[in-house]
Image (cartoon, rainbow, N blue to C red):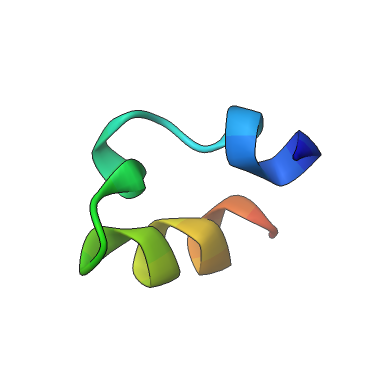
Length: 26
């Protein structure tokens, strides 16, 4: 839930979710 809120609304998209999450971690 932490990273879920940390990611922007754009990354919420299914295709962008995996890419945004990966970039959000580092």
